Amino acid sequence: MLLDNEEKAMLDGAHGTAKRKAMELLVKYGNALGAEKLIKTDNVVGTVGMATPFVRDYALKPGGLDAAFSEFNLDSDETIETPEFEAFTCQVIHGIDTEHWEQQGGAKEVADLQKRGEAHFGRRGVNMMGTCTPYQVGNVPVMGQHCAWMESSAVVYCNSVLGARTNTEGRESTGAASVTARIPYWGLHIPENRSATHRIDVEFDVDDMMDWGLLGYWVGHVVQDDIPLLAGVKSQPNMMKLKHFGAAAASSGGVELFHIPGATPEATSIEAITRPGRALATLKYGAKERREAYDMLNAGAHEKKVDFIMLGCPHDSIEQIRRAAQLLDGKHIDPSVQLWIFTPRSIKSVADRSGYTKIIRDAGAWLMSDTCPAIGRVAPKGTKVVATDSAKQSHYLPAILGVEAWFGSIEECVDAALTGRWNGGLK
Image 1 (tube, rainbow, N blue to C red):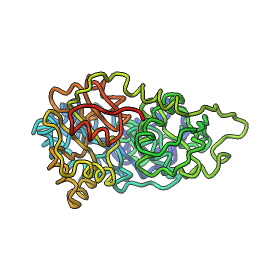
Image 2: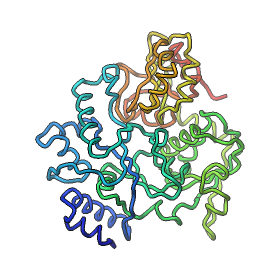
Image 3: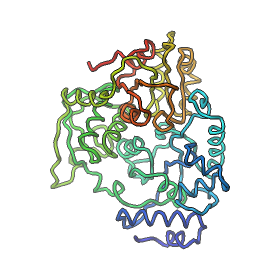
Image 4: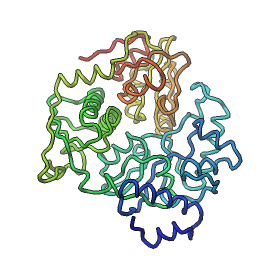
């Protein structure tokens, strides 16, 4: 791998032990990937303060949070004092909501440790956004900007909707990028690797949130980790629909980038996002494929009586919270169920001030932040059957929590919360 003089100095230890360890990690990582060089980045989304059990064990040992950072972000057995971060860095989603830890079945000492971690790493330059949707709360890289982001739904949004460039990074590579402001130049950082591989002719009129989730789930299933181009989309998708599409496609497959002419920035034309001389695999999405996606998402659900309704994966926007509040206004959920809605904490503050949080609480539901059931492995005690408007959660929760999961619209999910039963279905 070719290193510039500044990178060589970091590798030689001229800029301290932390940067040396970080550079050693990046060089090994880049060599394994076949990267010829590193690229500068000033936008990192990673995790340095999540209160998960394996990190917590390290944080409670001698060396504390520095030891945890050294082990899990620099892959170092040696405890190194956490340095000031070189790159602009945001904390992705956490493992627990430190305000609602008790409701989530957590422990006070875990919430306290997370708060201590937030203060420790925040002083060193980590912005504690605590969300899988950093683009909703201020981290909006520009088209062509090189980033180092974690979290599959965030990565696919960053690449596709914003036109920035990132691969799906891990805890260690984002930690090293934060310290050095470098990441290996490979994969989707390289322009020619961003061309479409599949053309999906969308013959069914996809408009509402549920249908964008179904389309994403089917597309991810058929293209896996390739790059789809959606042709024939009739309605203009907004941020909420695109985040649900991307999250679903990144769950059933490994989609990190998609193109929609007229909606995503690199897709100024079909010619702009296709490689000359390379034929696209062409597929169609119609009523039959829509039914296939719905059946896949609900394949493991049988019991109509639900225990837990979960909204907000990826984290809800203020528009989605308002819609939930409208559906719940003046009503109360069934006493046999719980309804949790997840959003970034800064958006929750807007919901608090707008009166939506009070409507939700008056209905017996909760508006939570910082985590989700899949990441935090949090759910009401005794949960066996979940209803959710998230294709991602419907995909992962059966394996993670051992539950049945129904997928449907927000209206169907709120109805399940009010009645205690799943009454949804594909219309």
